[in-house]
Length: 387
Image 1 (cartoon, rainbow, N blue to C red):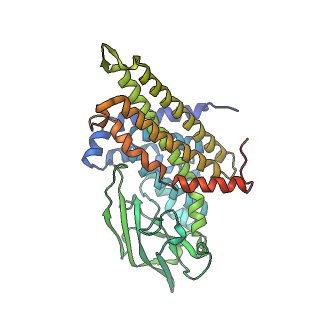
Image 2 (image 1 turned 45 degrees about the vertical axis):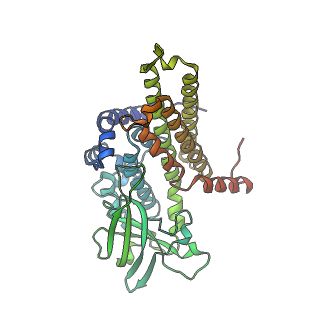
Image 3 (image 1 turned 135 degrees about the horizontal axis):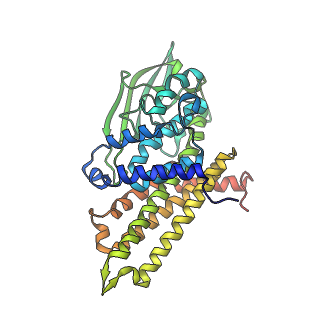
């Protein structure tokens, strides 16, 4: 059992770390507060080939191992978690297209998605259906060689830049269980009736847009049906969300790492009662707790990622990592804020942004309470063993 990164992974991490420290850390607070879109950072990620993380090499992508995939989101989130969202939704969609798309669909989209010339996301959530995806109401009715799509999607990351945008729809509203009538359509930007109506205001997770998308009589060629077969949409989406949970777990580790860095630096520099506050036992206890939580979350995330690299089904492992790491991120951000005292509540310091970004990690890619149920069912059914 090896808990160390290999030489290639260390070199990759160091390259990412240099990029984050140079291009993201110096501007994150100012751009986040002003609502400025991080165009220059996106261009830098294109140059590094990061939009091809989940794209096979034969289509021009990096096809990185899953541990390196996790390292990417950890390092970027250490700089600014919102930036990781731009890459995260894109990568989940690319993974889904690479795994389930027809060869024609792969040839058409993956090379440009790998370079960032095209970007994408994934449209699952609706105003009345989040975790319960079988409850979606967006429909796609066959009309000759087209599908006619009607519905509304919410909280869609990259909606203003996605081309194509995979959209989960119901191609058959009568079948039971409902998932047998669900499919994914690849809808291209500019298609008549496809409209991004608003950006949704958020507590944190800024830097990338989260949008409402309205589809009104959108005609989509039948050739845009992912995989070319109806009724497989939910399975296609859920299989891709396994990587999404690794992504969220790794983002959580990045938030926790930055919370540790900020708390440690402040404890060394801040003076009170004639000495650095890091000399006080109460502060030392909080610092130690942050470090323990951080390293435990990192190891669990890398473990789940390595399981995926071993080629085994790892929905239980990724769910466990996501649950644990996301809750440690919030705990670490909270303790870092406490170490900062009143300054932790100020927008002049990084920890207030970490405190706003961290809660989303327990909600995105399946809420933690729902994932606990998924993990428990796998354990009870003997599909996962903890030893």
